[in-house]
Amino acid sequence: MSNDRIRRVIVLTIGWIIFLSSFIPVHSLLKGHDKLRKKLERCLVELICSFFVASWTGVVKYHGPRPSMRPKQVFVANHTSMIDFIILEQMTAFAVIMQKHPGWVGLLQSTILESVGCIWFNRSEAKDREIVARKLRDHVQGTDNNPLLIFPEGTCVNNHYTVMFKKGAFELGCTVCPVAIKYNKIFVDAFWNSRKQSFTMHLLQLMTSWAVVCDVWYLEPQTLRPGETAIEFAERVRDIISVRAGLKKVPWDGYLKYSRPSPKHRERKQQSFAESVLRRLDEK
Image (cartoon, rainbow, N blue to C red; front, side, top):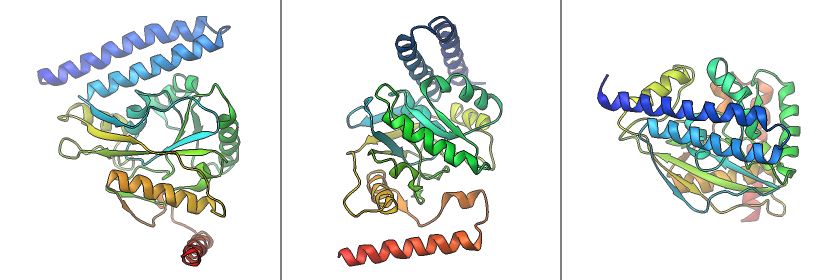
C-alpha cells in the first residue's frame, strides 16, 4: 500500500474516532435537551462526512448560497452515487430519503443518520410508499427540521444523463430547490453501479483513486406555476439541473433498472407523457 493510501486510511480512522467519541455521549447524555443535542449531532454528521471526502482527496466546489433551515422547502438533486449525499452533507446536514441498505450502511442509517431525520424506504414494499409520503409531508412542515433532500431519479445514473424524475417531491406543495452535481471523470468515475459493486468496494475504489473532483450548484428555488402539473414541474426542474450540470435528458424510468414494467404501467406512462406534450403544444 502506497504512502498516500495509508494517509487516507489514517484520515478516515481518525475521523471515526473523533466522531464516535463525541456522538455517543451527545446522543446518550443529552436526551432531555433536544435542541442542543440535535444541533451537536448535525455538526458531527457534517464532520464525519468531511472526513470521508478528505479520505478520497475530495476537491469540491460549491456554487450558490448555502441551504438553510426553512419550512416548506425541499432540495432535489441528480444522483450518481451514494457519495452525492456525503458531499452535500458535509456542507449542510440534510435529512435525506433513501433506500434502506443492509450491512454496515444499514446500521449507520438506523443509528447515526436517523438522528438528522433521514427517511428510509424499501423499494420492494408497496406500503412503504404511503408511509414515506406521509413522513415527507410532515417533515417539510417542521420549522426545526433539517432541510429535506430527495434524489428524484430514484436510482444512480452515470453522470452523463438524467432519467425521469419521480413526481413525489413535486407534490408536497412547497418550494423546490434544485441542486446540480457534476463529477470530473478524469480523476475517477464516481458512478456507483449497485448491481455490479457493493458500496464498500465503491468506497475503496474512491480511496485508491487520484481524487474525487466535482462541482455542486445550488440553483434558484422553483415553485409550481398556475395550471402546471406535478409531472410538468418535475420535468422543468430536471431541465434546470441538466442544463447546469451539462447532462443529457433521456425519457427513461430509473426503476426499470430493478424490474420489468407491466403492460398497464407502460400504458399509463405513455398516456401521461402524451398528455404532457399536448399541453405544452397548446401553451405554445
